[in-house]
Length: 278
Length: 253
Image 1 (tube, rainbow over the protein chains, first blue to last red):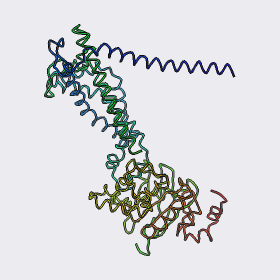
Image 2 (cartoon, rainbow over the protein chains, first blue to last red; image 1 turned 90 degrees about the vertical axis):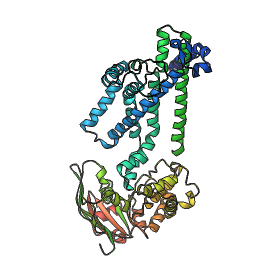
Image 3 (cartoon, helix red, strand yellow; image 1 turned 135 degrees about the vertical axis):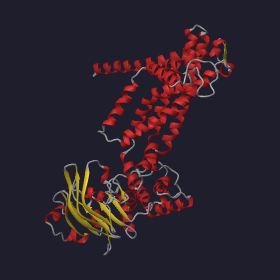
Image 4 (spheres, rainbow over the protein chains, first blue to last red; image 1 turned 90 degrees about the horizontal axis):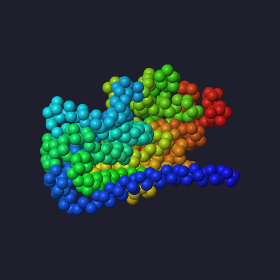
């Protein structure tokens, strides 16, 4: 009895410790970024455009570029991703070759490093389609990059919708499309939103693929044809070219804040979605 | 169709891939009567029920031979609109499955799908359907609460209200009480008795007392065959077939 008890305690301690390590790493990184970055944060840093290649001024244009690129890429990727997941789960026969091909493709796409998407985007969108370094090239490249995540999570979300909903809806005389639109997609929405949040995180943090496709102009992007530099790219340039470590940390600080805000808002809407009707 | 026959199946056979689930079923379903289908698990009674509004088609690899009539329409003809058929022949499933919406939205789901947009008209349908399903007194002042928070018995009556809202002529019920407690079950049976004034009802049940209590006609299925079909009294008091007698007296099943 005594020996067992002792072993159990040891194992509990090991698991507890590994949990502590995770929390420690996360708190350490965020804490470090905050401490180093907070000194350069003020209203001007957020609202002023950069000047002297980032040595002076703020980072307003990169914040706008980040949001611009993220929203554009979601506008492209969400309809395609959710659409293909609906096709795979609701329309395709399980054994259909095309469905297996789509599945395999999205799994493979998910594992490709982002720089390769960047290279493809550079050659295809920027040069071949002559779209240049622009919001459009960048967001299309980002869209391809996040498409697998959105598709897979939407697929899983649709899969968890009880089969009875479909039967009941069809038995009431609803068509397949009405069933999908009015019962299945609303029920799967929380899962779909989770996938979108994960993708937003990836899009906000992406650098390599965007340097190749959106460029690194510090100007304010107005039309989708304008080049743009996101916060993450700005951070990379500031640090790599030795422009200002302090400002690099300031930018990092704001990226962390942006991600926390996105997560918070998404969680809030998720709670509203799931708790109201279940 | 005359003589008060609402639905009729002629030489109906159903195959799931190679497995024959139903063998030449001939049955008349009388209008404004309750017809009970009884028999052991896997005997084909649920399969038969689902042929009446073509729900078996949702299962891949199903083939159907023979004919099923609703009034004068042969429902397996190519030009039959399945949506229209399912509107006229509603289905209540074994497990009450309310949609993750409010009580109101659940009931209004069907009418909305069939094109009713007017709020006043929808309100009217929702109230009428909930009253018909004996749910208005309990839920009338909680129309905007989530349906999933209701009790199992209430959910099953809500599902019935949702079907009634589409204004069907025939109600198919697949073991509607099997997930309910005794009190909810007796409420449901009471409801079935009231509904038959306006609807033709076909109910699959495992519970023979229930079949005897609620139905006017009873069909006994065994291994995909309809062994005996008659007035419920006759089936329970005077079965012609030995197998029927053995089943209802509890010798197997």
